[in-house]
Image (cartoon, rainbow, N blue to C red):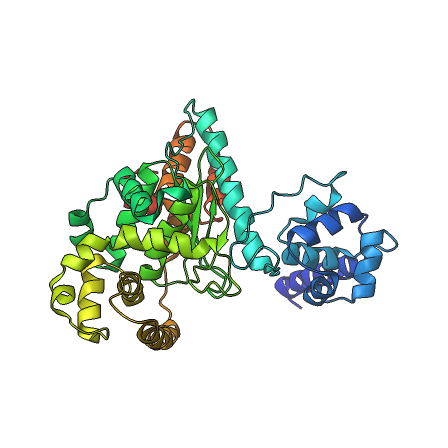
Length: 405
């Protein structure tokens, strides 16, 4: 019998012993922290129990302190609630995170937020708080948006004010080569003005297209990376209008008033006017020569490409100007939605370093590099704030930003 065999047998016995220990040993966690974590994760007891792999009765016993979970059960709880095991030993629960306004439905309606969405809101808040702390530790004043709007000003005046503030001319916009350059252009303009733009994944666009944290300093826009680039362009400007009005919240950008919050169509109108100004749209040849309320796909596509927006945005702008009908708009919108669903089935691969940079944004990532080089941030924390990316990916991100690491 060889030495290697004996060593493997000993290792297997050791692993088995540890597994038995984890399955049988009870952990004396704080039940208040357990309840707090479930609520922050947005789960009712029955759904939480199902995800953890236990019964609602057993979860209730853990939360009341009448029973204790095992080590393995605690690991499952931590995975479901997005918390490390050590968190459940805290003596007192932290303050509950502030509620984010929900503009997806009317004020008297309620939509349960998925744990995935709640997790993304927490991540965005955490990045915002980290940014403020790092700016202060570096001796810098956290950036702010020195702009505000009043809804009584009207959508056209507000749209002109927001475009001027971002310093993006119509000529610049029409010079963008494609939707990806357009998305980068608007995001860079926002980041240059002190808005941090994050992207997230793992949440359906049917639940949320984006959200804004409008509290100063360092206001935040988070957009759903699962959406199309053109969809994200519209969302990021919709959310910027929310920030300018100091009314951050969750958005899905529906225009239909029935069942939806009336605020959303107002901010949609602002975003549409920023992207496709009325005077410019009416001056386009395709619009000037068209003498019918129905539009050829060829003309809609040309206009959409010229303004770097989706065809639905062009249609909506035409509708707002009385140049098409509600019936035609709804018919074409249904076609576009069907096409979009078919396109979404083919998902591309995004390299880890590109996903990390996309999700955290250039402004936040630059700040992390600055803090690291000034010994304000450790390499471990650097990686954690970028989503626990590997060191080799951080180097690649640095190269893409023109920063050595």
